[in-house]
Image 1: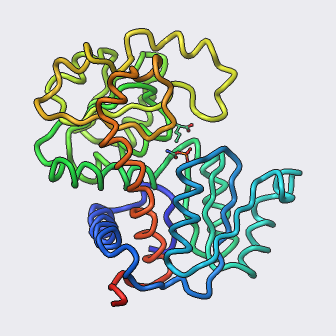
Image 2: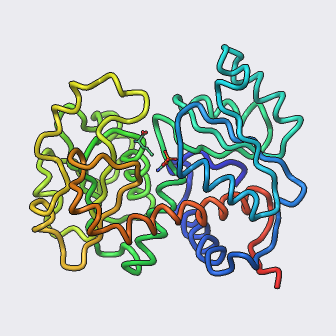
Image 3: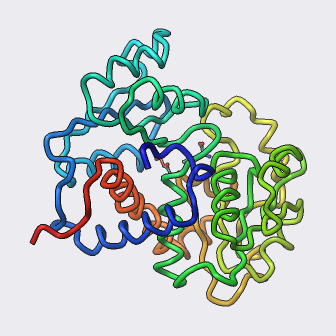
Length: 304
Ligand code: CP
Ligand code: NVA
């Protein structure tokens, strides 16, 4: 693996290997090797972030490296310098890059022009780091996803749903996406996905029926803040106690955060499932360390 740009580009073996490595790194925190020693990793962020920024900064440091945070507005990228020029400069100076931006093509171009390992820290198309953390959480809490229904209730064509749909394609679990008709994935995407185990419905109650995992995300992703009218489409899609009444016994609720209580999730459900949701947030650190270790060509063997 030279880069980590999408779930679409991973195989099932890649996902399992990264999750195994993440679990080891989590168990060995404070004792594992530091394969990033002597390295500087650039973190280019064109959108806001709490979890992703902090988990990458901490993770790079724990692996022995130095994280260099570069907000878009602090570098010439924010004044229009092309990504391919930024990439060719940074590629001669730093050892790897973590990028949060809008177009997927920008992380693809950065990877191609920089020649250094590049990680997608969220684009409009995918949020692969988050999905790794989510899968790690499901493995920890439920023991795995085999034979279980996973429901995603919310925007059916956001970065989160797209990454979840590719994860279902690669891993074979049942994924039901419940989304208002205007926010569902287009037919061309579903044809390209070609995954009979992924279905889309406009009925959130039907999607959650028997589900072991209920996942949601904001209705307006970053960059869509002005589209207030889009939120009106989501009446009836709040993940609340009533919606969860049909879920499987022992179900868990996931939310990548930040959460907007009273919109995509009720306060009662978020607080009731906070242990899992904040375990999910913590798992960003461990999952991303696994990606960093692999891209740095290191291993996660404990140092002591
Ligand atoms: N879930 C997630 O990516 O959070 P941040 O936007 O805070 O990084
Ligand atoms: N879909 C959300 C995810 C935030 C972590 C967004 O892109 O804003």
